[in-house]
Length: 139
Image 1: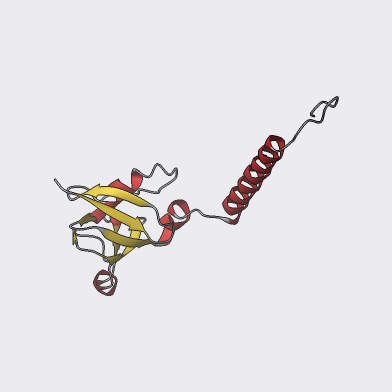
Image 2: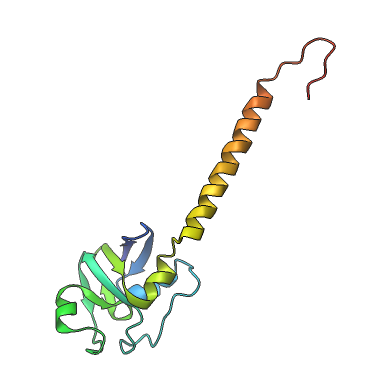
């Protein structure tokens, strides 16, 4: 069994996936809540991705969700694709909002945390540079 690194282009996140498991199974290791898994058999189309780089094997999947043109273009169902090398992919369809969930609210939260950390760091530096004069307490 060989493990490969799969990169989700939209987020830069990576996960390990063995050559014996589907990309969908590997994606679940990211620990993101709400990844829609559907039927896991290639029939529902929920887990559609576009493989943009790397080698892979594919199992049968529904033509209702993956046309021959899609297949040639690397647009496949993650539940039916097994890696044969490191891969890069884009998440498509219904799964995208749960895997690539960098929303404006998330970005605002990250910015707020970064600002708060900077304020605390500046306060720590300021308190370290204080010098108490004789007969004065440092506050």
